[in-house]
Length: 367
Length: 70
Image: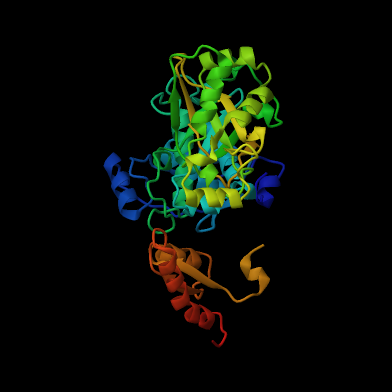
C-alpha cells in the first residue's frame, strides 16, 4: 500500500496525469546531450539515459491506479519523497515500459518496509543492494529474465530497466551517493544496472517464492532481498541430490560472510538460486520445500575452530556456537530462500548472500 | 524510536574516515548542529592498549560535548 494517496487518486474517474509537477528542462535534440547533462548534474549512473519527456512520464503514471502526486514511500538516505511522478521520471530515464512500471512501484514499497532496513543498506560500507525477484504471470510479457543468463546477459527489457529504475530512484530521490551518503567500499554492479530476475516457476518442483510467502499463483509479486552480490557455486561430480545440497549449504556458510558478523543468527536470509536441472534432482529427494530448507539449516555451519581466537571469543559470547562446536549460518529454516532460475546447462547454482540485518520483503503489484 | 524522541543529550562518535558521511547524513536529517567527536581511523588493527589510550584521551571531550563538567 502506498505511503499516502491524494484526493485525486481516489476520485471516481481515472487519476489525471495532467498535473505533473517536475521542473521542465530543455535539452538539445541530440542523444549525447541528455547523457552529458546527466553526468554533469550527477543524475546518472554513468550509463546513457533516455529522455523523460512529458509524454513518456504521463504514459508511465497512466499505467498505474495512482495520481502523480501520490506518495509511494520516503527514500533514504536523503529522506526524499518518492511520488509516483518522481518514480516515473526515473523509470523513463531507465527505459521502463508503462506495463512494467507498477513493478517499480511495488519494489519501492517493499524496500522501504521498516524490516528491510533501507537506511542502513543505503549508507553501509557493504556492497549490499536491493535485489528484486519477480513472480507471476507477467514475467514473460515484460521481459523479466528467469532462464539462461538471468543475472546478467539475457538482456530482457523488464529485468534491465526495472532494476535500473530502482537504482536510479535510490540515487536521484534517495540521494545515495558514493563518498557522500554511502560508504560502500566496493559497491557491486547491481548498484548501477540494478538486479531484477524472475523465478522459473514452471520448472520448480516446489511452490513459487511468492506462494511460499502467502501470495496466490496468479499474483504478480515483487520480492526484495538485501543481497551482497552473486556467489556462484559449481559441481560436476555429485549425482545424489542430498549430497549436492549439503555441498551447497557448506558453500553458503563461508566464514567471512556477513551472517557470521551479526550478533544473532536469526536475522537475514540467504537466497539460493538453483538451476532447473539441479532443482529437479533436489525435488526427487526433497519433494517438500520445507525439507530442503531444513536440510540447508542443518548443514550450513562451520566448526568454531575455523576462526582465530579473537573471532571465536566473540562468536562464543554471542551464543553462536552450539553444543557440538558448530557455528550455524542461520537460526531458522525459513532463512534459506530457494528459488529456481537459470539455464539448463546444469553444474551451477548462485547464492545471494545476506547483508545480515535486513529481512526479505514481498509486495503484490497493483494495476 | 528515534534517538531524539528520548530527549537525551546525544554525541555522535565517529572515526575520521566516517566524519564526512556522518556530517552529511546529519545535515540531510536536519541535525546540522549534531555534536560530533571524531576519533582516529582506523581503530581496528591497533593493540588494545592503544585503543584504550585513544578512548581515555577522548573522554574529557565527550563529557564536555554532552554538556557535563568533567
